[in-house]
Length: 156
Image (cartoon, rainbow, N blue to C red):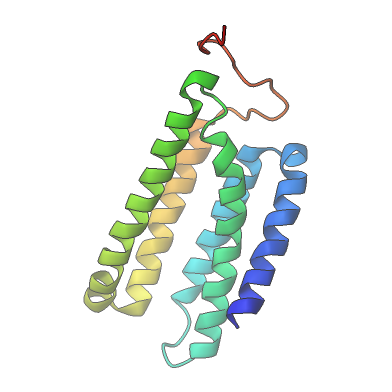
């Protein structure tokens, strides 16, 4: 099953990578976030005993997250001048890992305290709020723009 899931991830990421400049990073992020939110909310309506459907929805909800990562990776560093781009990527990567660590600690406690349905709804509400913030902030889409090079160190 793990191999099948990783093959699906690989195909989704390849398709996203090849079409990212055509549709834009912002569009990919917002559409992927919306799809993951809907699929997470759908989990709230699955009976805890229906393990196969739960597994399928969880697996399906991670595909848009993988696609979103393809757009987030360049978008998190492209606005920065070359001199600061590596630092920006490092901070972006570190914050994602810290968030994953915190989520891994909080999820079991939240699941025990809220139960499957309430936790699924709470996660979907948080994701929907994030989506609304993303829509309101109107992140600039650097699609087709030249990378900024000002501030680069002279090589000689």
